[in-house]
Image 1: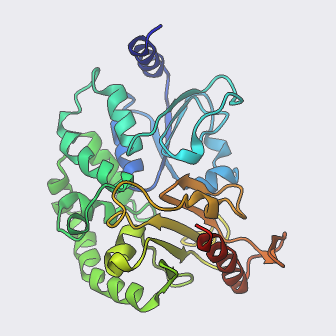
Image 2: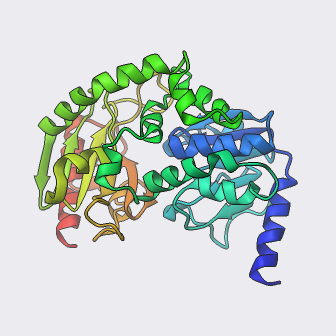
Length: 335
């Protein structure tokens, strides 16, 4: 069978599935992917998850052959897996019974779009998808990221606890434009507040940035803020090749309301290195956390408890952040 025939067979197999639940990442890519799949399976329940939650088994109760897992690590009990992360690439040892759709695409939403575009109308999403690809695939410019493009602001508003993530997903599912989503009564107040806080966040991040050997390090643990690599590297400019953002809550575990484990995210300065970074950052993300991973240019992991440079089983303390950073900087220095 030729490549075209294999693709057609994969599409046919995927669309014939009886999907009743969609477990998807809680970022812009995950939300758009879920919205696209909802156009084919409109009654499917939506569950938002995090890679660490899935790997920790906290989403096991959601998994069966009627579940689609999107933009997250593949689960052996699901029915459909759609992903594009380097560390989640399928292997020959994967369990049978899961329809796995994986490829090196700029976003999971792009994969979902390509699966369904011949069988359902997705024309209203084509322009938006270009921005999702840019944001998730590291193809956006500094000027674009700091612009007032509606998709940029929509991505900043996605929040599971407030219900905005589901509201945005369902609005996209039903063909509501990004501009109309931003102006509706459920979203407009959150947009105004997020715009108000933008300058404040810039100031907090700028004050906490430390550049070591062209690696920008930002410490945001226990402050209730999250940032991404675009935000940090847009502020630092060409003085860094990559950045490391520490966020989350020291001592927290997955499943705690409004708290999550202290973690680190790694990002290439894609504004400077437009065709790929100078170091595979997954080496840092998987150095201590076997569940860490993502892309070579954008990935993450949980901070691990260390003693004498080795992982130990105890609660993570603030001093462990420093211990992890010491090893990561040593690895970075060998690039």
